[in-house]
Amino acid sequence: MKFSLSVLLLATLINPLSAKAVEMPCSMILTPPNQNLFNAKGAALLYKVKLTPSFPRTSISLHALHLPAPRDLGNFDSYEGFAFIPGEISWRFSLYPSSSAVDPVWAGKIDSITAGLEKSKIQVRPSNTKSGQLGPSILSGSIQSCH
Image (cartoon, rainbow, N blue to C red; front, side, top):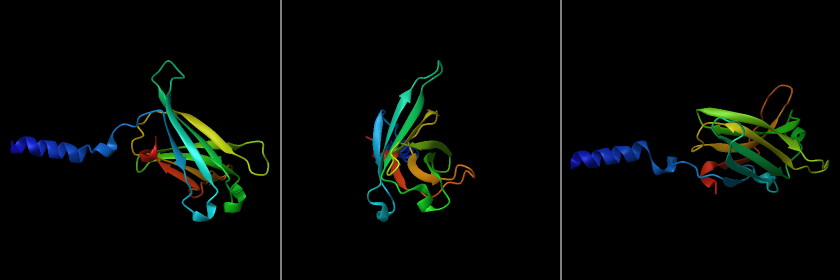
């Protein structure tokens, strides 16, 4: 009996419920970590896509509103989506401005993710397209808030 309880306790510690698979499709709200950007908001949609005969991939699409001009944040000329599993892997993808010159909507997607996203975070960051430099997170969300 003690052995069974020990195995059950060990299994719970090694594979906690918080690491369960993400149910897709799901969406999350991206919020600014900087309170000065209170108008900036975004949304991410995650779901499985089957674009080739191989197995499905995960698609992440981002939609970001009321962001400052990238140049207002430093030596940046664009925005990128940045999805990552801390300490494991990351993906970067371009966000493109809508045709509105004054306050564009920034949007983009990536369809090639094969990793499980149970511990992932998704961000919008300014970028310099020439140097590849990424700036700090402007909007952020965690897979735990995905509904």
